Image 1 (cartoon, rainbow, N blue to C red):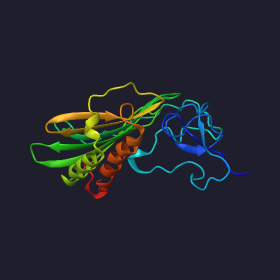
Image 2: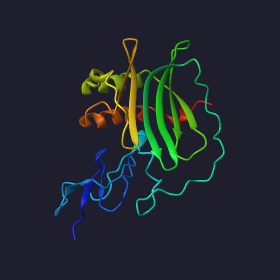
Image 3: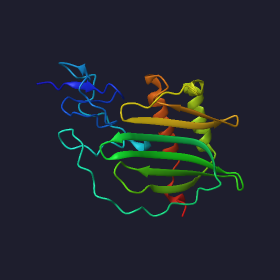
Length: 218
């Protein structure tokens, strides 16, 4: 029997029919539409693979039948990350997980500029739902990271959606902020068309590509 692929009504994630909740954003799949019946040659069998900083935080919190796991046991705080005080944020990519059974979470990658030294830094902040602390690491990088992000933003025309705010829905949201002409512009999956959601995730992938573990800050 051919597999039946459904599409999450919130984030568009494709997966084989069966789970009760979307493994990408945590939304109920009760009203999910069927992406394809019979031949599934045009739809990847099983979940779509997502890599890099854009990886959904809700994945891994699901049991085999699609239901949420019991609340995890308290965990110790993670070691303190590098000092990010006094740094100027110029790009921020954040994937938020909201109101899951075990709490909220986030996976955030920020490009900073140290205006005193002219040094660029990329910092990563991760807290999975149910965790008691935030993991924080930082790396030296170059202005090439900012140039690459802005090139993508200009090509996708994302800056035109600044100021169009909406409430985050369906258990998760991706937020992108970037400095343009000394103005911080904020856009997110809750206020840009669905066709641009992958463009927001591309910002996270671009920033992640400039992380060099040999240049980690301590």
